[in-house]
Image 1 (cartoon, one colour):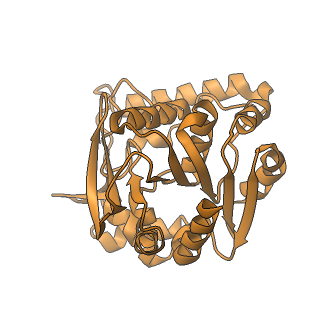
Image 2: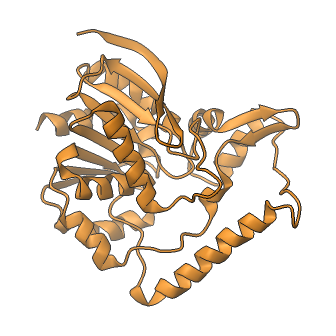
Length: 299
């Protein structure tokens, strides 16, 4: 077995798009994949600080961190498509089938954790374990809000469509004069340090004649037309058969503590660990996170 210490770009061609990502570690085989799934409006680079430690302490693992569609270097969905939550699950299913992966271990942050949980519930035979990073359960809403959610989602989608149609002209893109400007803008709306934001931003922007603009698909910001009810969300968790580890930041998302209350007792096998840090605690405490993953997988 050889271990390649370089982090490489990878491209997976799915039915209607390409998924880009970063890979490192052991040569790939069907039973040694550690799949890393990033959060909303992040990209595969959010796992870059962990990769040297993954290669050091999990030398038998082939590490794969993807850019979700519409993020990083991956394709945007076609103009007649949208970013439904369930479609992320289908994207994962395509990825598994393309690569003939049998079972994988997953490390997933934020939105990535929600998708990983839904995928593991629907396809338990494909997931050995999940490590959730500052993410547990699902964003849910009361059943009585279903119609309002649909209305808000449709209006949000229509507004975006009209802005980009010839009827009202093309929406003006926002450009940054430099990478530094884009990094500072990301820092201002997150708990990321400058250096950590820079990793994500550099993979998430593109340079054009007018300056630097975000690569991410603007449709990612549309209001979802539907959300799970709490009972539906809890059923997903009950149907997860693999061991689940939650690692969350002491200053992370408020919804995590609520999620532990609503979902923690529903897993078949569940442990949780709090580390000092924020929502991107995996970037702040990369070495510790990898040690915890190693210990979890060894058990």
